[in-house]
Image (cartoon, rainbow, N blue to C red; front, side, top):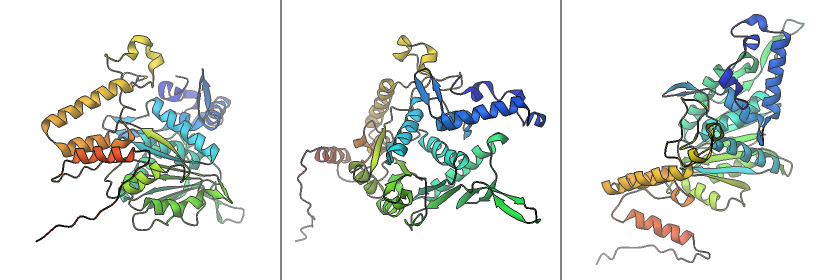
Length: 389
């Protein structure tokens, strides 16, 4: 309740201006929202756990459309850990690179805790959202607009511009001469598809760049090279590029993803591996949240309130391996390899080939992993030609 009081208790009547506009300006209304803003900016300490302000904002005020209706985020260790990683990179002048399984909620969490948070509560803030596929940029804009529409008036902000390319926070106000002037923070979110032109952020100053689904961004290293100076002030990096994605097809965008993942220090990244075991089974705070299965060993050692947000990766791995065995028995190697790629238990499973041909794709993948694991890899590239005589 202390971490997500708005979710559990709602906005109290004396501070809820949607229910009753007369509360606006009252001491109780002012005190409540000043306290909320303090938590959003400075974070809260809950026992031995520090909850950063951006995570507090995400938990309490983010709304998402799902198959089960409109929900707020679950309190889960993975997304708090993502927040810690980002805060560390911001402090140390690093970029954040995440290789992950699918459906881990990272896109929703990152856009809210990084982009929306900075644009709404920062000053002179500019962020860029980029992808090689237009669908991901459109998906971001759609989700952002929905979440923005569900915010209470005290946290909402007017926009001077709100289109498919950029969102600028501000408003127009009539001056003493009767003319309208633009006012506000002018904080800006740029949304760009970089498939044909990786230089679309070049020349901008950006506090943050969030790069969607690197594995499907074919010229990603070129995009990175063109964008990294946007995050710098002189010779110092002050902004953060946060990139995440699944492996995709290693013949396309994942080539760049794989290279940067291997040489992360050269590109100034901190790596955050999110395998399929994460965000799979975890303790929920309410009955509608996903619960830990009854056979979880954690239930034997901890009380229910201690397991809120706590994950059981060991039980998740057992379930994932069981599903893989089923696919192998069915003889569907393509689906089996796609499952390994979409739900990787380790980083070697992300960058797997899934193309089915006359060769045993599993043996090829296993040999590729073995070669890459060598301390001093030694191999020679040959071009095979058919003997046609």
